[in-house]
Length: 182
Image (tube, rainbow, N blue to C red; front, side, top):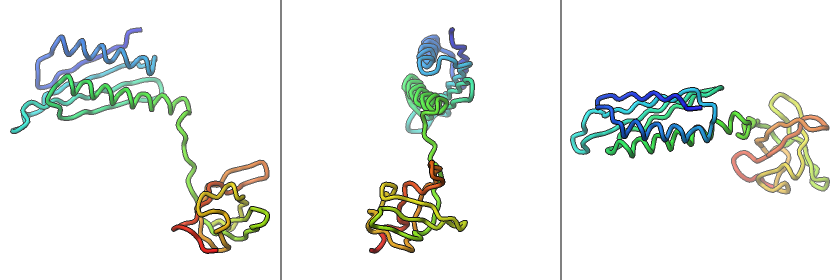
């Protein structure tokens, strides 16, 4: 399927060479997302800059199922360089968009704060008191910084709560504001 491409020129005459370059670059984007619905490209010659001469702005708007990718590349003195840079940026954003749609992009859980309530150093685990009054288990393997052996009761920590087979646990535990004494 050929990608529908709309090219608009502002402040300048249309050009067959530019039109061909746009269509060629737009077609290559289909390698990264085969279901792009539309591609709108605006090429604009902005007001002449006193010292730099002609300045070109390229805007690209891609629509695909599930969203839209928009790119704006300002102020290049060569219209073909501005076009290339805009399509390179559009390709990168499109790749990110596709990764996110596939679920390849990790969404990090928000960190919570608490304090070490109890620590059983010989057994290699402890408990964190949360702001809402619960206690969460954590093990030596879940401590990021400082080392587990440096944690003590009362140490303020950040952590991510995760549900494990045994119930909620603290993962990626790290002391707030640096190393704790011990």
